[in-house]
Image (tube, rainbow, N blue to C red):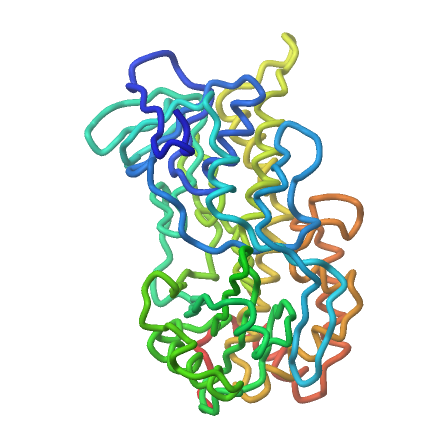
Length: 428
């Protein structure tokens, strides 16, 4: 029985050794489980609450979504709404690419697959022989995928100290009300400080949700530590008042129409135990500059499934270590870690930049041609491939293009952030 009926099929752990055990039942876990099951692999997914409904709002560029044909294609209904995006830094920019907001419930239903065995539980240890659950149950598996999110439950190394976080507070209003703020546009970023408050800069993110609803969200892109949610709610209320809305039109006191966001964006390289491959936010899949990870997780699921379903010939058997190495390379090898490290340096630049100059930095970024901007954002399609997340040369060209468009003062901040490494958010 699938999630359409509000339930998950739960099977006992007894049985044959699975080809893949997935720890975590979010988008990254289910996309990998579904892709592998559809290629004939025996897959077990373990989650403490496998019947929970996903609540987050997910967005991505339309060209990143696997739609059309193929075993992992998503149905059209997973896209709740889409439109050309706009960005405002010191000027207004029309972005060439269409931005898609996903229907979270439709995405969850689409990623469910009856061929996946589902266990209610929590994985506490894993290795080459499989996984151990919190109740002591041992589940044998040829490979374990850690899709436990930012908690990185199976990592052999955890980052200490404060994390750089993206935080946001949003409210859902009708499209007529939203149009008085956005002019009817899908607003990817609006850096204008219309809230009238000093401090770390935040921007408006305004996207349609379908059904005549629009999410208006005040977002702090990255800060160490993250900007407090009550402060973001205050900024959002002040911004919308400045646009001419009355408090009665902004239901920030209605939990059913308010979204709170907080997640780390400086996810370090995951040091997985033997026999474990990391996926989604448990790996360095979260883009430090945007917070995006869902589309990349969907693409990584396809590559993982293809790698595991490819059977070696009888003369070249692959042992357990070789299977893990092949899986890790499929979802993100050495080049992907290099690109992620470069983007982490970009995050350091942002954190060390004087707050008043952040919009000017993004003015330079949004003035870029589409190709380097896509490469910086991690979009696929820059060279006819979905592997832009491990295209080192393209990422270097994108960063050099950004550098060339900055003022000498901003170039100095960029160099300082690159050389000094992780830092706290600058005070105004």
